[in-house]
Image (cartoon, rainbow, N blue to C red; front, side, top):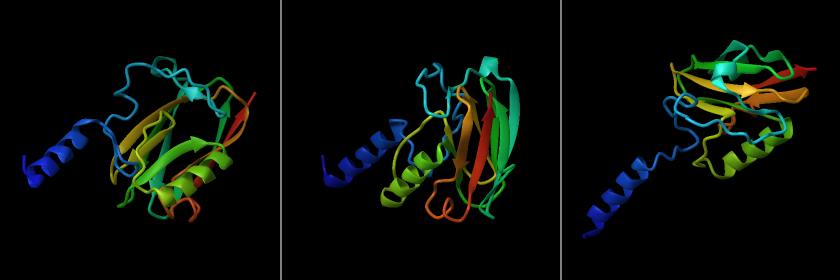
Length: 164
């Protein structure tokens, strides 16, 4: 097989594996999953769509802001976040502690093509909406942010207060 044909085959294999680069929007992010992860994070775990308590619409804009930027949630609630990108550039929504978000943002600067797909994040193309379903099993203050390089640093951060 010649080098050009081998390169084309490698590209096709890469597209068919289902791996998504950090900046790409994955269609049907939460809806495509059949099993719900039981992995517990410091800020909760993936939620069961059949146990959603309420829906919160979150808007992401090119002004590097979320609306709303602050949320109050009761411990144990399972929330469906409908995350809409009303901007003209890619944005993302990532839940976590401020420490985790800062570490992830630093890693994104070093490796902007990182591939990952976690139930607590959504990569949303301009004009599109993605869904994240999350159960807040622990009380405390947590955050969400857009970790695309430069966005987090520009203030694209929100706060979640989980009350007992």
